[in-house]
Length: 219
Image 1 (spheres, rainbow, N blue to C red):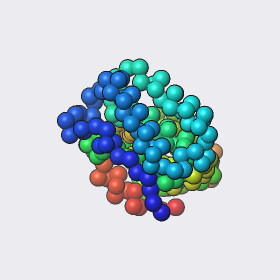
Image 2 (image 1 turned 30 degrees about the horizontal axis):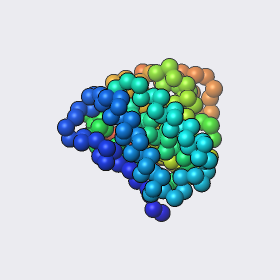
Image 3 (image 1 turned 90 degrees about the horizontal axis):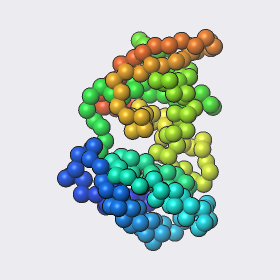
Image 4 (image 1 turned 90 degrees about the vertical axis):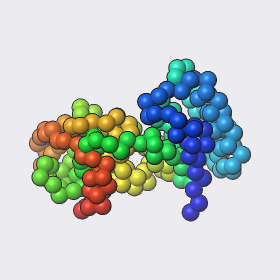
C-alpha cells in the first residue's frame, strides 16, 4: 500500500524554532495554500469521497481558524482535520519529531483496546485491572476523547471502525497531542464484568516507558 505522505518540514524550517513558538497567521495561511496545491496536484483521489464544494468548505473553515498566531502543533491539528475529512487511507500527514513531546513522565500509562463502544485497559498492572472499562479521563468522557483522536489516523471514506487500529496502537501519544502533557490522570473506570464506577489518580509515564508498554498489550 502506498501512502501519500506530507511531512511538515516541507513548510517549516523546524530546526530554528521551539515547540512553543507561534507562527504569524499570514505565514500559516500561505502554508495552508501551499498544502492544498500539493494535495490537488499529487493526490488524484482528493475528490473520491468529497465533492469540490465540500473540500472548499473544509479549507474555508481552516482559513477561519488562522486569525491569530498559532504553534505548529495547533496548525498540525487543523491540517489533520482536512486530511481526515478527505477520507483516504493513502493520506498521511506527519509532524517532525522535534515538535513531539518526548520528555517527562507525561503520558497516559496504559495501552488500551477499543472493543465495540468500550475502551478497555490492555495491560496487566497494579493500578487498574486488565480488562477494566474506562469511562472518563481527567473529567473528559471517554467517547469524546476517542472521537477527538479520529483525525490522527486516516481511513478510507467514512470508515470509523478502522480508526481503532491507530487508536489502539497510540492512545497515550494521541492523548498527549490532543490534551497536552499531564503528570497525573484521574481515571473513572469499572472492573471487568462489573458496573460500579471507581476512580483513581495514576501517574504518567515517560515516552520510553510508553513505547515498552505498547508492545505488551494482552487482549
